[in-house]
Image 1 (tube, rainbow, N blue to C red):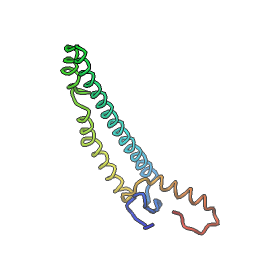
Image 2 (cartoon, one colour):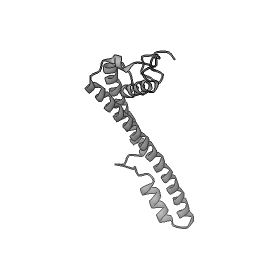
Image 3 (cartoon, rainbow, N blue to C red):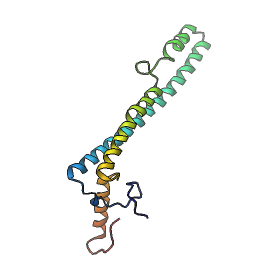
Length: 149
């Protein structure tokens, strides 16, 4: 495997070479975990968007069924008052997804990448790389002459 310095999944970069302080390492780790939770929140928002979309499809089917059953007034109210309404403050969920993605997610991703570039030469998951190295060294034992991955 080539030795790369991009911090990607195939990177064999030695995180000890970064010369980070404990505080910098902690900050990078907390920032990385925070970003991962932001992405999870985005996934939850997408799930909300899809679930509400399915709900609206069923409600549209209910409108048709109400009309077929002779309940024009209820069908009209569903069509006019509920189906065109936004989920939150008259925004549809696709608008929430778009705004979250472009106004928040992109910004925090860029911020995290900038901090990581400045402190860790762009290397991702510094703490986890150190854990991986320590566990592999421990597994090899003190008598091994192999260099750690």
